[in-house]
Image (cartoon, rainbow, N blue to C red; front, side):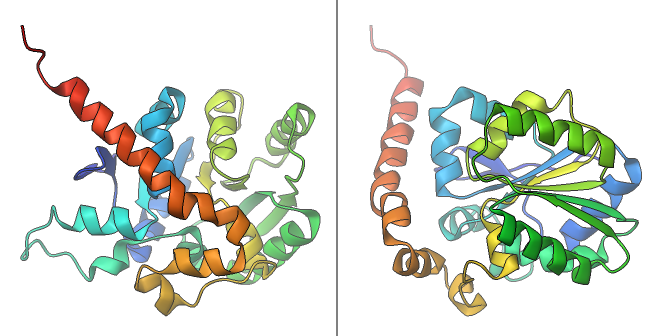
Length: 258
């Protein structure tokens, strides 16, 4: 199954915009096929890494699904649509991990899930919540706090024993993408989804912004209020880095005068 990539103007990236119901249908197909697939998401942080890090860019370019997780990315993508193109409300295509994880019960044939990331308490809480969301499925977890080479080796062996159909990897960006990129050939076949901090959020360890705030594109303000030291650079500094990268990219494309 191949999904059509769509351009996001100005940001020079592509995405595969999906609604929650469309994503669960795609995941059902992936699970039935049984191969290795990767599901990632684009926000301004990932777009910055995409243009700054060739390895990160290659990983995204070869991923099977690139969701839109970030209001600025969504609004720019929406400018590519025609009024009669059949799209639903634009905000329905903004899928952060916490938007679609509660719908995993609608994924057909999903019986084995692995959760890697966060501390022990948050990981256990996420596992318990997912068992409620997908009744009857086996859900196993491995904390990812203090990630290092030994833990990475242990995780690969653990996954090889479990043979899950779906793996939720929440190590933070770009570590989770780096792990999948370098381990893809040694990991067992599964659908691998990068979910960032969603493990803590669905476990209730980290407070999730009210959905109406997210739909207004103001989730960044909520995170800034709760975690100012962690989020301030991404909100106030990183957009300028991205702007510089995009400008440099455009200058390189211009024909050189003789």
